[in-house]
Image (cartoon, rainbow over the protein chains, first blue to last red):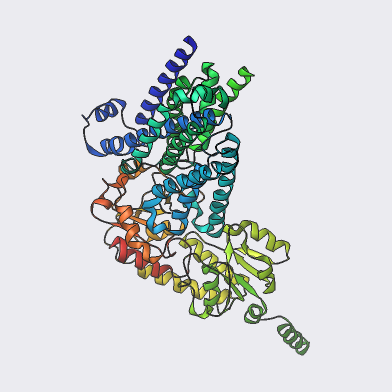
Amino acid sequence: MARRASVFAALLVALALATVASLAFGAIKVPFSEVIEIVFGNGPGGPDQQIVEALRLPRTVEALLVGAALGIAGAILQGALGNPLASPDVIGVTGGAGFGAILIIILFPGSIALLPIGALCFGLLAATLVFLFAWSGRNRGSATKVILAGIAMLSLFTAGTTGLLAAFPERAPSAIFFIAGGLTSSGWEQLETIWPYFAVGFVLALLLIRPLDRLALGDDVAASLGSKPQLIRLGAGIAAALLAAASAAIAGLLGFLGLVVPHVVRMAGGSSSHAYVVPASAIGGAALLAAGDTLARTLRAPIEMPVGPFMVLLGVPLFLWLLRKAV
Amino acid sequence: MKRLALVLALLAALALPTGASAAKAQRIVALTPFGANTLVRLGVTPVGIGQTLGGNERFSPKLKGVEELPLSHPNGPNLEQLASLDPDLVLSSPTWAKGNQAMGSLGIKVVIREPRTIAGAYADTYKIGQLVGMKHRARLQLKAMRARVDAATRGITERPKVMLILGVGRTPFTMLPNSWGGDIVSKAGGELLTGGVSSSSGFERISDEVVVAENPDIIIAVPHANEDDIPSLTEYLRDNPAWASTTAAQTGRVYVSVDNSLLQAGTDIARTIRKVRRAYLQN
């Protein structure tokens, strides 16, 4: 219990530091006192206020939301499927979202405003197809069927994406940031459209915390306790699909986060209880993405780089260190 | 003795081909519009040309009927299709780096000629002239090109701050002075905003914070799109919340250029400069 409490405390400190850094640092130097004044509504106006208020603040909120959503999506999927390799990739969401976005960028550049919606819809379509296949025929709803259907769907949509990029190579540079995963400074406009998907996903994930703990005992034991394993798995899949597709719509493809963060918090806290893993993954994911994004836009400022590689740089050493200790 | 020297000189003149006949003897494939049009201006018709990004409107009418080779990144043309044209020389681009190597291994002479600046276009015009044995014509061409560019840049009345962006979406790249479009805009009288960034590639993804801080008067986007997409893309870019406070967005001076005249070098430098001045910089 004390160990979990200290992990929570450390994660909260990391989250606070990452949030402050995300607001304080950028391509343009804005005095920290001014940043504080602007955030609390007492800004002096001018370009600095515009930079903090219209660019950094929404971007920081997006990083926190997307990081939390991917952390939770990974945690509930790994719990529901009983598979440590589960992540939003496994239910096809990442592949579908990638295809939807690249389709708009490559074939319909005039409708580029629809990119987040394209990513969201195709991400959800891929997940729906996975669920349809996994819940049909024999052994419907089993973890193995979900994973195999997910891998098949991921391959299908990835092939479509690769085909589009190969057919229109001169248009590929516009797709790099989406594929590598990157936040943009697009104000609140994307969140205004996407937030309901996050909201439903977060609520569903919270409702699944206790059922997932029962499912961790095995399908038979969970059923004997009155739970419905297939229903729990479906609920977790829907919640993860909503969270991951909404995340892809805003920040591109960041599958690594959903895979690694739940493992890190599990190993650090020494517990697999979902009452601990789900909120801890949310905080850890949010802190990691906010920190990674700050690095991506400040390390070679004013040049911005995709955030995906930075999260890997931040997350992998910690993950490997914990893995070594755990083994 | 004098007679012998005269006979020898006559024989040598007959044995050595003239510049024009040397050019006729060469089978040349030009993979870039710049290379193809330069050849035409020098009086040489290539046996094949590369398909351009964004249509054929920039090709000289004299290239009508010349076989067009589809290009794919990073291989360039299909090697079997290229080999069937039996070229002696291919004027290529660094974009087709992998293909250039493969063409070389087929025994074809490959010369990279795709300028990224106006000065580079002048230099490459002369070098292509040298390659095809048309140095004199190349010199005349250069003189005419310089005169046309001088005329196109005369009488600039103002120098607005311009940001030139490449690509679509909310993560566009900024074109730098060492890009074709960047150099054209600078020559047309624009003060190119780059956030102090330099890159050998000629473009970089720079922070929107820099865009707000440098506050461009004009933003010109060079996306990959069709002409029909201009209104929706312009609206999308003008509505970009990250740029809302810039003079360009507030005065409605966000433009979209969907032809590839700012993206890829051409021989129509003066015409492109005039278009930039008239349509975007209004100077």
